[in-house]
Amino acid sequence: MAILNVNPTRMELTRLKKRLTTARRGHKLLKDKRDELMRQFLEAVRENKKLRREVEQGLIVANQHMAVARSLMQNEALAVSLMYHKQEMSLEVSERNIMSVRVPEFQIKLKTANKHDIYSYGYAFTSFDLDDAVLALSNIMPDLLRLAELEKACQLMAAEIEKTRRRVNALEHVMIPQYVETIRYITMKLDENERSSITRLMKVKDMMVEKAIRQEKALDEQR
Image (cartoon, rainbow, N blue to C red; front, side):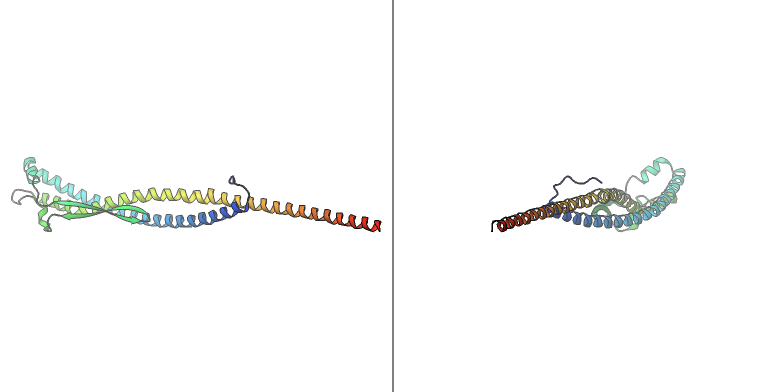
């Protein structure tokens, strides 16, 4: 593992140790975030899979009833029956925060609370299969919107999981090992410099002792 290009000083060693502590703390937090995101992502995927089957089955039933209604009614009569409507639906979009991922939430607002307002026609000249088709579509609408929520949430969480995974890997396999190797290198350099300084001091001391001995011998000879 390559080390960082730094000066082997005690100040740099202290700075790198602080960075290493911060990097390890960030690595743990990102791993916890990734694990929690993955847990919620898998829950959303399971719900999405179950809800998709139910919605697809509901659409199949609605299409079957509509196909029968089309076979029993003239196209003009069917078009006129669906031309005007009593009920109106609006959609309110809000956001929910999941581990810093803002996912959408949809809420249905209906014009009236009367469940019979979904039928915009009289019953005298229409097929009951048309009623069943409209009812089936009305019943699956909440599930359809919930499915849209889950699809978008899964997409956003998957992107965030991938981004968090890359950050975790960068810290775990690049930055933290670089800090560790650089700290080891600086520590070795400082120890080596300290040993060299001690060796030089010992040599200077020996030289001073030898000089003092020579001076003492010279004084003894002069006496």
